Length: 631
Image 1: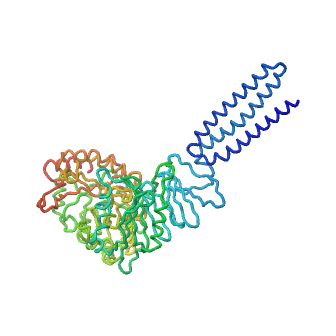
Image 2 (image 1 turned 180 degrees about the horizontal axis):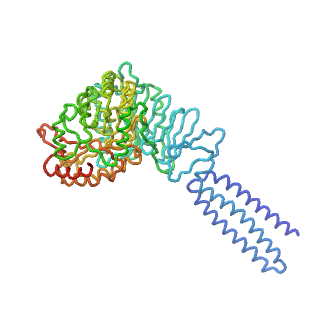
Image 3 (image 1 turned 180 degrees about the vertical axis):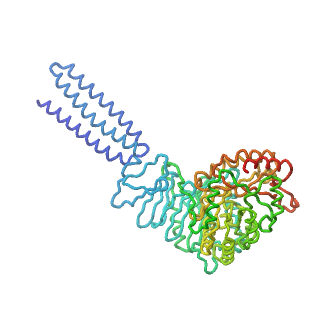
């Protein structure tokens, strides 16, 4: 009896320890990390081994001791029970470890408040969200700061505690707004073939570091320095623009931080505030010193948008009817740019092309700068001849040349040219007939006055311009303009902060989506590595990039053409007509019927890119035969 009592005490102690292990496993499983599954599996294996050893010992002992078989069997059963309890704890720990991303995170009295966003949407509930194939952002708030943790990119940093996040474009960039100002963060890669230092100084930041540009646009450069912050190389550029008197623009101080995490990749952290002062500087360096890549990468960055046209309530009935006609047409409406076709009322030039291709053009393309008057007579003449005008306004006074000097886009942003724009709007209203209005096309490029490259590397300047001019049109009662948002098919520079989506002004400001893709030919093959592209190559790529975001808009190819240098232009035209109908969103297509000239003096204005459809009899024949199917 005494030995039986000792044995029972030992079994009881074993069960107690097993239960303790079970409780300990439940506590620890909530903190499991990526190695939790491995550790739990190994422990489970050891538990199973212990189980079978115990069973073996329980059945071995009675076989060698006469009269103790019942007792041995009891020992084996109790040992089995204790081992099962142990293994249950391990198995439960394993299962919870596998779902570690969905377990409640214990928060102590001194722990920060934790908020999660999954795929751009605030996560509701007490559990943290699943990381599987998702973009999870974590925000930890305390009194002094907000810690932003990007699980999909594997980094963290500290920001002001009152930051409001915008993760809509998380694949390209994220934005935070606070009482201090805006902070925009993006991960960037230096393109292959470039050296990082020269790429940044001579291309990305060339205007910010050009003294003539700074002086002409009332910009003061406070800092341009490379610094070692912790174990990372960081370049900091700080500047401030002096706005025009009465300007509504509040954020004129910029601090650009380039955190090089690898030789050819970096994080761009842009701070924008009302003024460059000690508070801004303090925040910049608190953020930089907090930057860390000690976060396990889980999930993938995702952009989640819901872009669709919000049509103006004040549109005229005729404008509504035209828009509905464009949306519902099952045959593409063809147009062209004919030099002087609208403003100079070059009716002869239009008729010549129409006769050549045996097709009455539905759309005529015209250009103007922000200070040019509304071409009333030309617009009226075009309307009377049954043409829809696609009017393109460029906020530029230098025709997108000499970008390293004065930039009128910043003055327009400040409101200096409001009265000129108001007069244009009043005349547009007086015209009264519907027209397509394309403002500042190809903005995500490096050759225009109103893109980020020439406007402080900040796409928000473009958005500010767009919304300002749109508001002026509204205030002047314009009810006949259909607005077209028209980025370039590729971004230059090819950086995430310069992505076309960074320029989108908002659903209530856009009615059509414009696309542009030229086959530029190979004239500049040596200088620019130009290549010949077939129509389908170009527009498959454009469709792939654009369709996920702009499928709810009617599309217009606002201008396009093919050069004849480097390939077979007539065949290109034939293939274009045979292919274009596969892109169901395209409702209007406008051929650019003019030539691009080589601007270099030594080339004596040689034609670099012959785009004309009437370049020769073969190109005209190909166009006439192709467009016949759209009559």
